[in-house]
Image (cartoon, rainbow, N blue to C red; front, side, top):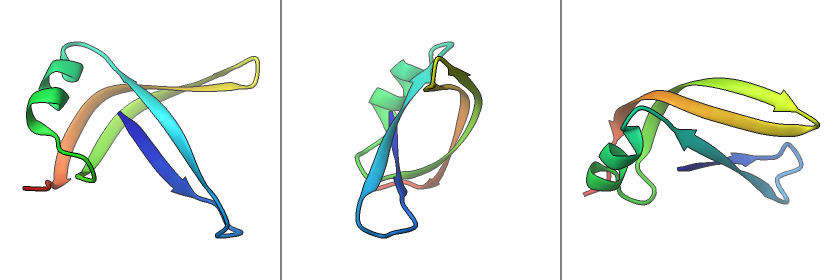
Length: 65
């Protein structure tokens, strides 16, 4: 799963990968579609200037049919 964050300069966006744990990856493959809007409860870890986001739970906000 990835999230896209728009930069303040509106020129480029940043794609940030999210690692899903505890069976969430299987659920996301089965139910999520590209461009669906979801809420993600996650932990954030920055180590050696590398941002890692570990998803713990997600909620469908605006699923795409």
